Amino acid sequence: MYQKLDEPKSTSLLGKYIKVFLVVTLYWFISILTVFVNKHLLSSDTVSLEAPLFVTWFQCVVSAVICFIASLLGRHFPSLVNFPEGNPLDTCTFRKMMPLSVLFILTVGANNLCLKYVGVAFYYVGRSLTTVFNMVFTYVLLRQKTSTPSIVCCLLIVAGFMLGVNQESQTLTFSLQGTIFGILGSLALALYSIQTKKSLQYVNQEVWLLSYYNNLYSSLLFLPLIILNGELEAIITYKSLYEFWFIFIMLAGGLCGFAIGFVTTLQIKVTSPLTHTISGTAKACAQTVIATHWYQDKKSFLWWTSNAIVLLASAAYTKVKQLEMQRQHRSSGIGQKV
Image (cartoon, rainbow, N blue to C red):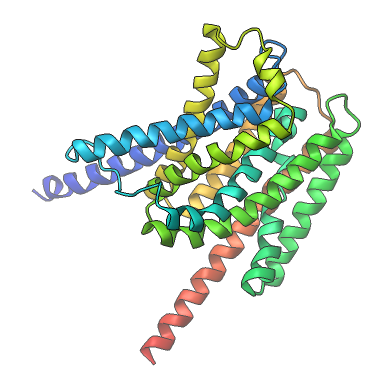
């Protein structure tokens, strides 16, 4: 009798574990696939299109179109599709969201340019300073002090980054330009994360609405940048522009760009922000190992050491912040009781 009463509870718990496992696995698959697809689009001999901003713009367009279709379906079939209501053409909304969209194009543009010039194996280390910039901007912009353990973790990340750059510079795949874009991408992402929290209040905390507006506005902002970067001629003269294989891989890149946003939100929803960060750190480790085998890159012991330092220091920083938040929550609870 008691076993029968306990069965639904254990079955429910098992179902939750299976759901978490499937979502985390999906996140790993989509995230790693996105990096490799973008690398192929940006710097492979098969594609050979010198228009990285155009590739990024196309991915924003695909994401915006998917959100637009979901918005239409949600309006006409609310029982099937639940999409928040909003008007992207509202001038007030456009003005409020513009800072976020500017930071978004800087982030994805710099990240894709970094990926264009550096190898997938070095990509994570090349963009590893996001945590450091986030700590700096949190202090400068929000006036929030950082604890000593957090600072130590950030210093270790910087040390791992510098060691990684030093070791990568001794290989044929090193690109100073790509490394600089990685630093700029990390800086822009840190600002983007802070601005995202502020911008969510303009869309009633609706993540999908934020993604819709952001991709739509970014699609418009990318157009003059494509022209200024001199990519228009490369696009027009590209021989495979209308061939099926090129359109297919561009659409695949666009779908990956949209999917990574979806599975990231889904992973945070079914787990927690902390688990998401830990999952992302572990995924980066797996991604690095896969990339070295896929591209047959032989790396030195110190190169692997730099990756380990960055990964472990990033994980330690996340754990430190979690413990600080728990202590703050407990102290505020005690204060309320008193």
